Amino acid sequence: MAVGAAIGLLWPEFGQALAPVGRMFLKLIQSVIAPVLFGSLVAGCARGSGIGRLGGRAVVLFEIATSIALLLGWGMVWWLEPGVGVTLQAQPVAAAVPVTFGQVLVNLFPVSIFDAMAKGNVLQIVIFSVMIGVAAQAQERFVRFAESVAAVSYEYIRYVMLLAPLGVAASMAATVGAGGFSVIQGLSFFALVAWAAQGIFVGVIALGLWWARVPLGKFAVAVREPFLIALGTTSSAAALPKAMEAMESFGVRREVVSLTLPLGLSFNLCGSTIHLAMATLFVAQAAGIDLSFGQQVMILATLKLTSKGVAGIPRANFVILSSLFSGFGLPLEGLAMLLGVDAVIDMIRTGVNVLGNCAATAMLGDDQNARKY
Image (tube, rainbow, N blue to C red; front, side):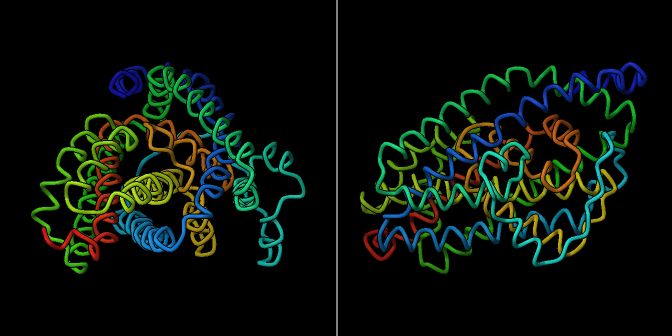
């Protein structure tokens, strides 16, 4: 970010000339949207279809938590407006064609999954993948295929992200060259708001634990190490083994831990959900796009669904944002701009993911063994 911002400030015309390099990087991210969503959602829904009563309770708790996280992230940006005043250089985006509510409902369902993938229609891909995942729960070979598609897609993302320094520097140079110092100010403010939002959600977690009568002091000691691992690695998956060990030591039964924590990697990434909402509205503000109430509801509903495809690996959430931006006419240049400050936000975002999963596990296992601590 620093190199690109410096180029944009010192040589604005040269910085703007680097815009095609950033766009090429964004196209690479776009190219993997469909396989990531398909593989992740099919496998997640198939594996989650037979989780039983405890799994059902876990999913309900996860949905409540992620809904709060989504509204919190959106509300913080709506209130503080960190994107207002940021000049975002972007290619022209086609104006949305007014449609009726009935047309919206009809357009949720694809005529062909290949057509939906070719057009990048996120909601159609999501709905098809969810339905296929539920239908395929007894087809182990197909589920393994979906898991393989997801695994290959994430490896592809890892390779693409090796180009991130070049792509982000070029995009930042172009954006700062066009918008000047206001871009840097806006991104810095956004990072501060992001940390504040994550901190507020930690308070929400503590309130939930208190309501469930889980001892906060003992819980804080138990989750300290997995939380620090998440901060250091920016990967929820990397912290999973230590989190499972910590929750068992805390007093939660092994069968509860072994179901709830892995399930939370797909269904309960609250920190990532907060960021997805914040990033979307921030880019809309920076691009000067005034979203109607109906558009905001549709975006939040889409994020609620697509956030289930966010894997516990670094930067995977940008694939979700890329798909959302494409579907709702938001400029992809904003995505590259956000990558410039993502390293500052990613650590706390991942830490909250792990903290939220551990808290949910403690709350679900509280009626078993945890209260004696």
